[in-house]
Length: 616
Ligand code: M6R
Image 1 (cartoon, helix red, strand yellow):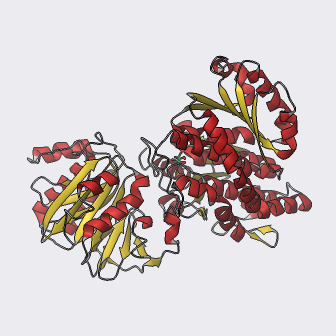
Image 2: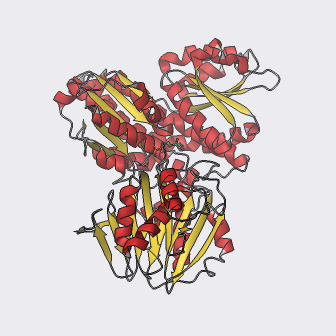
Image 3: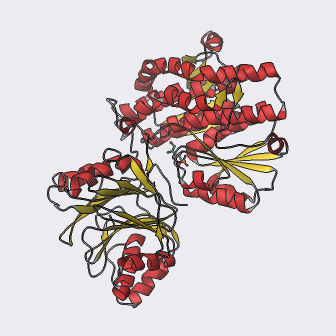
């Protein structure tokens, strides 16, 4: 939700921090700040707005010399995105500097307590409370490590904290609870960051801090402690990601780069899971007996991940005949789900740190269900705490709007549906082999579908100025509409809604306005449902709508040959029907992207959003 970066070494810290913050901006971009120390004295710069503004303000960091520092890019939770509320925060008395990602839930009580001890506050943030709490314990003990440990014991909620103390020049302290923090090992320098992307340019050797652990970093050492301050030994792991995966690589935006990467990452995600015509679930060695005993599956996720779940529900029910239900993670605990040992909960999350999904996962486990997670970020909370974890190998997804994350989630949901189908014998050998063969060629078919890019760019240029756009479809086509509609609204800010095509006549059709020639995007790829969706399209056109229909090559003629339909047609290849959503989503992603581009939006960093939503 916020991005943290820290450096201690022999070089100037500011340029390293500014570069790291630019790479972390996907986590929040309301305001940014850095604190650097020289000979123990803090110099601070912070401002509302993007990191670029901070960069300008500090002349690329030249105004803040010093070999140790912390940086922060914020997604505001407590208090508006003002300069004062921006991090880092400095404690009352000036000894402690802190950057924070997360929410201190009992901040109001702690603030009262600290005020009663005579401490004062400048900002509205919970972070300043954490800062003063550490300062309070530091004043008592004179030991920064025990001050951090004491503060951590009193803070409720979630946090990743980077801390500097004026009396310990050269040392960074870090701790976390439910928010990611990695420590990076350099040569004569060390780093901390919310995400490896921030430090990958400098080092590939990292340790992921676990909940409640505390770390002390100097230029030459990294020391790990438990929350009780017992020393810990842990070897760093090596990150295999290609640095260029977190760069734009010549593309104008991460979003278009990530759309174009989809065939490749889906190939990476699928290939280790298919061996000699069978499905292998590496990381999820589920037995046939367990699958056969399943009475229900819940797919629990947020945003795009939940819409991938809707496609997954259709695949699982169609191929494996297990009842499946999709629930928003933010609602899961409140719908009092009926869970037992025969219920599987599938949590889907690109980041693996979404607070709502974490809470739902824990609720499911507490109620006796097993949790299988589909996660992209290795070592993230959801990945670590689930009974089984399947990684999507999408690489770093930087654009706030998910594209390749979503596509790799779809791929793994198909894989799961087939694994379940095999265990339950719901497909004949021939049907199973046909499905596996389709999965193997899916990345090639996606590659081919990327060829629609220019067509969609043209269509976006025709329609980008509309105030509203609606999406309709049936079955998995409806599931795709949910995702396509979210994509459009989050990056273009155009008002948009997705409807099950058959529902239009029950109310939403009143939205169609003849004078404004309301634009509707219809998805009609499902062979058995095309005729029904065509009827709905005609109902809309006869009331003045203009319709872009996304369909298959074979159904294209049905639509183009119908004089009652006004609009354009976009066709993807005919393909194995259960996996067609992976093709049909591509033109819809292009449409959202080029519409937002034509409107001059900040595509990779849309307003009010953040990539990793670590608050409930
Ligand atoms: O990291 P997660 O997959 O758990 O994130 C879930 C949603 O926050 C995410 O999909 C969000 O809806 C994206 N902005 C969609 O593009």
